[in-house]
Image 1 (tube, rainbow, N blue to C red):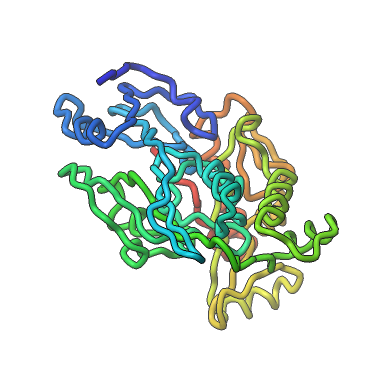
Image 2 (image 1 turned 30 degrees about the vertical axis):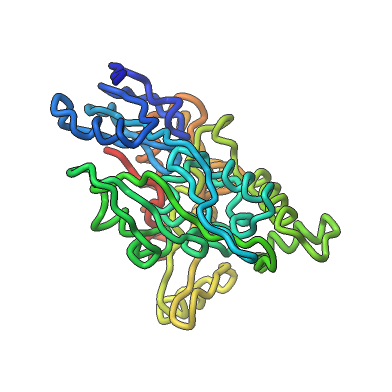
Length: 338
């Protein structure tokens, strides 16, 4: 096993934060993963995959295991649906593109989300009215203590809004190795309800969109609003949109009648965190190389050499101002590694 020392993790996290791993190993197989977990000489271990949902604020004094398991296979299919197994190290957007090339529907609204397949269930990734849980069948994860492979079906994952069992009681206890998704081969259910998708399709003169049309529209919207991590370090949406009760919403909307919102159900309302942050004057703000993106206030960025601590401090200032101005708490969607 090729264990390296003092390796920069700058290229292994989408924020482009230059912290060092004391020890580092690339994981390309399940047996290798089991053996790495058993290494007594390295009692502390840290898992990294696509590095898209984390903010590294310090050097990692541990054996950093980069999960690079590859492979996409069809495991089951009938006339209407197909079940696809993707290994944890596959790039998420490449999986979406692969599924569209096969004519499989279900992932088109989730185009261009950064990161790898293995981290998708942890936060139940979602965009434009679709969440991973809508197509998720199961995943296999390795128990960190025993090296045993365990299956989790949709219910066992306890999915919520940007949430799952892997963020809570199973946190740091398992490493997801593969995911199975159920996609459609025909009679695709199209999700075009989000205003921005409707407008993009309208601008393109598309009345009866295909799954590829929706993906193209989502990619165009994301590219117009969100920075490419290859150009400007970022982790996509840094904060979750706060969900509040009807009682709290009624009070909020009286004070802020122009505020946009989404009705989750008759008792819950979602307020866009990006709007709250923008109202507090943070959109486009920059403190050294840490900043808030000029087109989307929900995205914090590294303009070059920001440290994780500098981005974290900026995020705390934003939280304080939103709470002061709107009496609402916004929570990070990004996993902050201290």
